[in-house]
Length: 352
Ligand SMILES: O=C(O)CCC(=O)C(=O)O
Image (cartoon, rainbow, N blue to C red; front, side, top):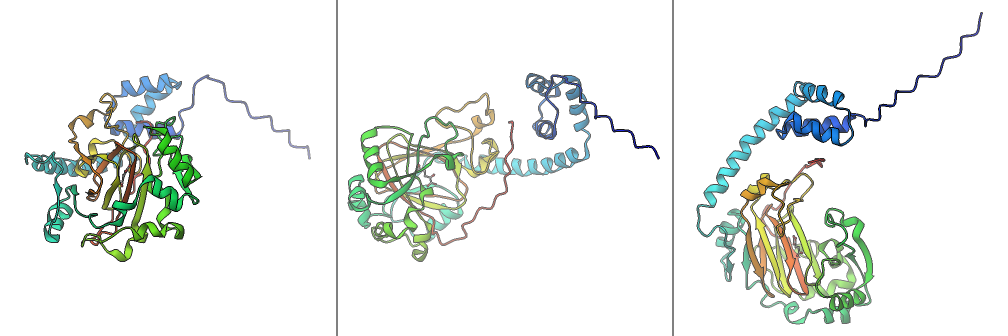
């Protein structure tokens, strides 16, 4: 028996110099066809990215008949029905000449609060929630330094060099002694570079428990037994900007020191906000880029400056961008005793 002949080495693929049209690009074609991009504009982008036009053109053509793509198209058509109903609902709400105005209210009876702001889903500033809170008289950067300066905290830092600092927040976490951070805030002037945000879980640490003792009576729509689990603390310089996002809970956010500017957009306008990643919108309300995000021009932004002692009530799903106008200390709590959950499943959509 003769030995099997040696298997010749497999021929190497011919080097074309083009990037390969891989699964990622095929998904890109599907997503952009769903966005109603023209085959010509897609071909131009792909060619510019180094793909072979002779391979891309038939791939774009084939995608339009692919059964998986046709299934996605059907779901998109169902979704667009819902989008049109929601857009009409928003138009009806905006018939109210006061739609764009954020009210400042005190002594709102519980029934009215639930009906008008929770069930009616309207942001409001409550001016009297914190009136008896020791925090209002006691908290200041100096007080933080004296009572808690020896403790470590987790802050967000080096944000200015990263346009996506909020999405990439895990990369910006740094530990520092609170005393050092207070000094940095007081000496550093206006900046968005560093901020002690709610993600620090400070209030669940025993060393910071005295801060919760400085919170007095809560509004009667809150469950006080849940406060420690559902409270957050914010401290930073003038100039911090929390970019446009929505939370997955309703909450109250009380300004203790300094002012913050809050801008809100209704959850009914989510389809205008390019929400292709988790809870974030790429639209910057300070500099909207209407070439990239033309639908945003149809959104209505509510705008209010919140003063020390005032509390924002943020209804479920409302988009907000928040800028500190002064050195700022705030306290937020989401122990609101009504159904308070937002479930989402929002995979990242790339290349938009
Ligand atoms: O105060 C801020 O910078 C952001 C507040 C915020 O987004 C929130 O409480 O959900």
